[in-house]
Length: 61
Image 1 (tube, rainbow, N blue to C red):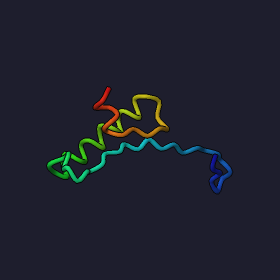
Image 2 (image 1 turned 90 degrees about the horizontal axis):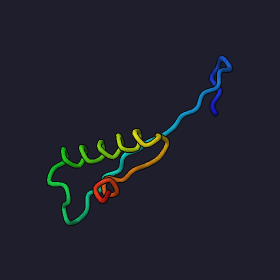
Image 3 (image 1 turned 60 degrees about the horizontal axis):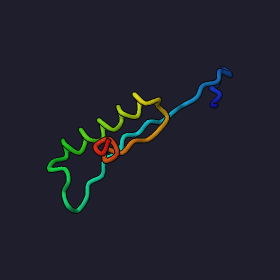
Image 4 (image 1 turned 135 degrees about the vertical axis):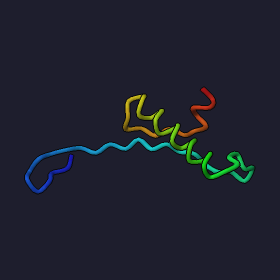
């Protein structure tokens, strides 16, 4: 919980999407790498927020 200057309380959550580039070159372009991270991000948000999701885990599902 965070207090602002006016005394109001609010909370912050984080739902990162993670995509990693390997030496094997699993993403041919930076655009595809970013799209994979974005897909993982929205997967986190759809499944309750405040969690992290790797692109590999949604591909395996």
